[in-house]
Image (cartoon, rainbow, N blue to C red; front, top):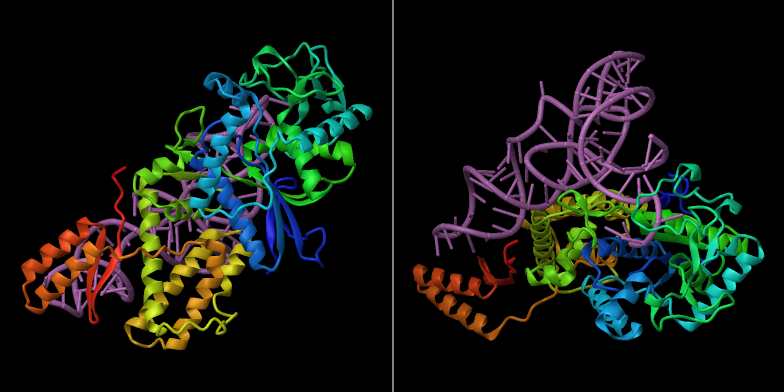
Length: 472
RNA sequence: GGCGGGGUAGCCAAGUGGUAAGGUCGCGGUCUGCAAAACCGCUAUUCGCGGGUUCGAUUCCCGCCCCCGCCUCCA
C-alpha cells in the first residue's frame, strides 16, 4: 500500500508524493516551542507525532531533512525576561536547554536544524520578506508604525482553515488594534517597539521593532528548506492563524505553493479539556519523572493513540503504558534467550510483520500497528511455551523488532543489578535450596522494596527492574 | 454563528457493507512450595440516538444529541 496522509488543506487522505520522488529526499518543517517556560507534555505529544512521522518515512527509505524553529522572542518571552530582570537571551536559554533535555528523555530525534527567531540571519530574512510583501501591496505600515499583512489582497487566505473571512468573530482573547489595521484579520509582520519591549528590538526600514510570530516560520522555512516544502506539521491550534499566515506570507513572496502536505496533531486533554498553560492543567516532563515514570513510558503513552484523535491524559493511561512495555520487555528477553544469544542481523525476513509497516503507511495508524505487534508477541510466546520456536526464528523476530523499533524507539534500558540486590538474591538462592520458603519469601519482599522483581524459573531466579509510580 | 476532531467493553483503542483487532484492568484455569511471567478461558447479541437504503448497516445516506478544539497568544 502506498503511503498516505490526511492533508489538512484538502481535508482528505492523500497519497504521499514528495516533490522529488526520484531523490527520495523530503523536507519537513515543524513548529517548535516558544521558550518562555518549560514545555508541557501536550506540546510533546505533537513532537512525538512528528518523530513518528520522520522515523516511519526513514524506514520507508526517505532521507528526511527536518527543521524545527525555536521562538525566542514574543510577548511572553519579553515579559518573562523583564519580570526576571535578566536579558532576553539569558531568560530563554534556560528553557531552550530544558527543551533539549526533554526531547532527549522522550527519545525524540533531533531536527537537523533548530533555527532561533532572534538569529540575525533570520531577522534579515524576515525584513527582506516583509519588504517584498509591502512592495507587492500585500502589506502596509499602519499608524501605530507596525507592519501588517493585508489579508484581503491574498485571495487564498482562509483556505487552510476553511474560514470565511467575513465570518471571523473575535474571541476576545487577544486585544485588537482595530483602529490601526485595515481589516480586523490583518496580522502583524513587524511589531513597532513600545516601552514594554525594553531593550529588545531590531532596526528596520519601518523603525525599531521586532518580528511578528508568523513571519519567523516563513523566513526560517524558506531560508533553510527553499520555497517549497513537502510536509509541514504542528498542533491543530496552529492551523489558524499561524499556518494560514505562513501560507500567505511565503506564497506572497515566492509566488509558489508553500507546502504540499499539512499534517496536524490533535490535542492532549486532561480531564476532557485541552492541556494548556493558560488553563493551568498541565504537566511537564519533570512532573511525570518525579512520579516515577520513565521517558519511554511517557513516550509510549503519548504515542499510542492516532495523532488526529484527541488523547486524554490519565494516570491509568500511564500505568497501562508501563504494563504494555513490560510485556514487550519480557518478550524480547525470552526471544534473546531462545535465539541462544547468537544475534545474526542478516537473518531478516522482510515478509514478516508487513502489517505493522502497512498500518503506519495508512496515515500513521499506530494503534493498528501496535495491535499487530502484540498479536505477534502472543503468538511467539505461545510457540516458546511449547518449545516450538527455534533459535533461527527467534533471531528473525528479534531482527524484525530491531527494524520496527527504529520507528518506535521503545526498547528498555538494561539496569545494572545493584550489588545489594545481587547479595539478597544469593541469600534467597541458598534459602530456596534448603526449602526455607519463609526466608525465601521475605528476601523476595526485600528485593522488591529495592525496586527489583524476582521470579523463579526452571533456570533459577530471574531479576527484573520494576518501577513503581509514586501514586498519582 | 462558522469551521474541524471525537462518541466502539470498567478504562484506552483498531476496524469493515456480511456480523466486533489489540492493550490495560478484573475473574477462573495451566504452571509454581507460594508467587511472578507466559499461555488458555471468561468479560460489547453490540458500536451516541432516531429514521432510511440494503438480503444484511457499527460501516453508506438523512436528521438529531453529547464532548473537545479553532475563529488572530497556543503543540
